[in-house]
Amino acid sequence: MKADIHLIITKYLSSQANQEEIDLLVSWIEKSEANRNTFDQLKRIWEHRMSDNRESDALEALAQVNARITRKNHFFRKNHFLRSPLWKTAAGIALLAIFLAGGILAYRPYSDSLFNRYKVVETLPGKKQRVILPDSTIVYLNSNSSIRFPKKFNDASREVFIVGEAFLDVRHRDHQPFIVHTQHVSTKVLGTRFNIYSRPNENQLRVSLVEGKVSITNEQEPDSPIILLPEEEIIIDMKTDVTIKQHFEPDNTTAWTNGTLIFDNELMSEIARKITAWYGVKVVFQNENLLNCRFRGKFRNESLINILETMEKTGVITYELSKNNTMVYLNGKGCMNSER
Image 1 (cartoon, one colour):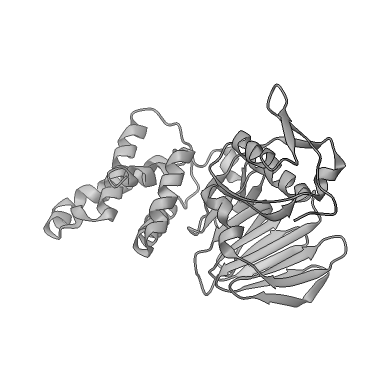
Image 2: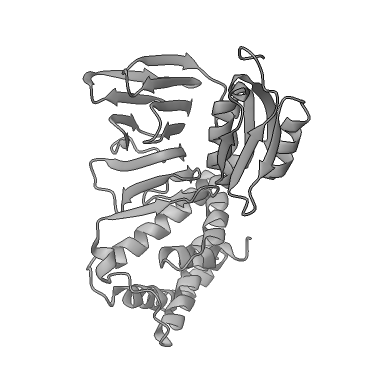
C-alpha cells in the first residue's frame, strides 16, 4: 500500500478513485495523525487550485503543480524532499496531469452536476461504505443508509444529514462545530467518535458516544440540549418523545463497522431487523411464538446461512430460503413468554 497511496490520493482528489481505493485511503488516514495531516494539506492545495470555478481548472491545477515541481526540483533534491509523502503525492498529481493532457479527460470537476452544493452517498441493503468528508472526517455508513453533506464546508460549521446508521470519526476543529441532522434531532460536536442510528420507518433514534463530548437537541425541546460523555447513549422514542439516557458497551454498538454482527439476548423481532439490514433480505415469521424467542451470538463476516443454521441448532427455530434468496421464512415451535 505504501507504494500506491500517493496515486490513490491523487485519484481521490480528482474523483477517479473506486470504493476499494477509498477504503485503502481511509485505512491509511486512520493509521496516524501525521497521515491525516498530510492528506489535509494536499486536499487544501487541490481546493485552492480549483477555487476559480472554471471547467478547465482540473487540468490547470494539475499542470500548475507539475510546473511547481519542475521549478523546485533542484531545491527539493538538496533538502531530501523527494523522500517525503508530499513530494510523492505531487509527483502522482503531475502524472495525472500528463494523463489528462493526453486527451482522456474523464473527470470534469466543474461540469453542471458539480455546481450542486451537496453530495449524497447511499448504501444498498446488505452493503456498507466508508466515506471521507471534506474536512477529513471519516464516516462508516451501514447498509440501507445515506449521508448528505456539502462539497465544501463553510467556515462557521460543518453540517451533515444522516438517514439510517453511521459511525463517525470527526476531525477536531475548535472553531468549526460538526452538526449531524437526523429526524427532528441535531447532534453537535467539535471532534469525537460516535454511532448514530435513525431510520425513518422506525420510531427509535439512538446516539451512542464512544469518545469526546456531544450535545443533542430535540426540535420539540430546543432549549434543553442533552450532553453525552463517553460510553453514554441517548434513546429517543420519536412517537412519544420519551428520552432515555444510559451507559452502553462501545464494542457491541460499533461492532458492525468491522463486520461483526452481535445478538445480545435480543428478541427475534430485533434480530430480524438486523438480518434484514445486514443481508438485504426480508424475514417472514410463520409462527408468532418465534417472536418471544431470544438469542445470543457473535458472528464476524459470516454468511446468512451460517447464522440461520446456528440458530436452528437451538431446536426452537427452522428456516427456509426463497428460490432467489431474498426471503427468509422462519418456523418452528418458538418460545413462550420471552424465554431467555
